[in-house]
Length: 161
Image (cartoon, rainbow, N blue to C red; front, side, top):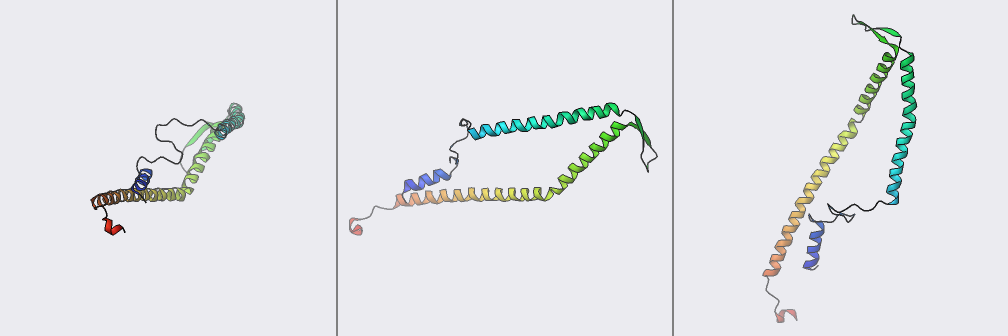
């Protein structure tokens, strides 16, 4: 392998390396492809469907709140308190507490996945540090080899034959 091949290899793995997509930091983004436009349309569809579902649910909740304004006495046993609340407040409060409890359970059950993700991130960081160290070592070895090549005298005519 010639010296220029080594230099091009070093340039391709060094800090100025060009990523696989061919763009460097600061380059303008490429024009959107048809598949990208399709994903944008899909996002609009998801928003539309969510509005179509959420609007009737919100209207139903408002209608429920308006029609159920009667008071309910809530006994907070074993505490010595009783609270007067409208029926819709009790219903919405119980839905909210259930939502928060469900979110807490989901968060707790995802603990193993978060732990694995943190471990993989640590492994990736260690691999990146090792790669940087090996690149520095390679550059140092290439520089030493280049200095040795320049320090050697040219071959004698009698040695070539």
